[in-house]
Image (cartoon, rainbow, N blue to C red; front, top):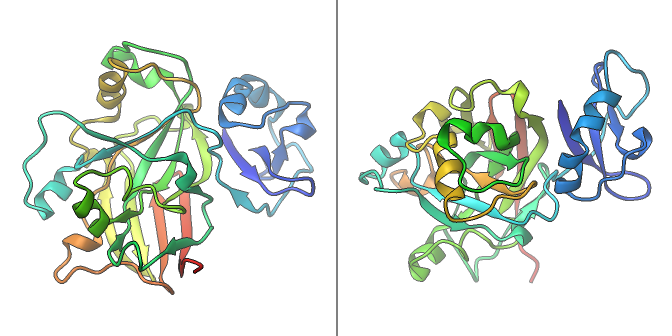
Length: 282
């Protein structure tokens, strides 16, 4: 099952993809859901409502971010073996965790705004994002994937110079528009192994990142287990699992994003984001 959030005549609405490829708003199915947590709670009814080759629906929707009002957006730094090699860094003893503020979230085709008063070293990081489906704490690693509702694509946009100045990651990763997410949530039952997915980034059509989630140092199940030891997960929470090699700051010379660039981020089977880079309004 794929769940998206699309633009409608009366405002944004969640929608589910039917068997023929069309999208059906949850309202048209008699279901009310305004946040990601609410649409997760309604997943059983949605799955039962859209089956086979049901006709009608929306055939060419405008996709918005399917992540609305998350309680937590948790991100991981330095979590791919190939990224460690390209940056000549040793593997961390434990996962490097930081928060990404929800005000940075934009849709899969919205513009990324860069403000040269804040940063001249804006970088891309394509990542596998995990959406939690159940309230849980102290989750065993063997059971961790059972609390996952679904997966989607993220670009963890980063201001590298601000990151260095701050000595931490939260602000430099959380500027407005620095978290494109989408284009939809693919339910976990359609992703048999989250550690076997290709992950790629293109900038202006040039491939920059080309790797696999198999390169994760701390795997998805372990990350959920580790994080759950100290915090309670709620439905709709999001985990960003890190990025592979090929980031702009590690290139020689570094190649950062500038207005006019187009960044495409893809995780195999989960869709592709396409975001223009523009100058932030003065």
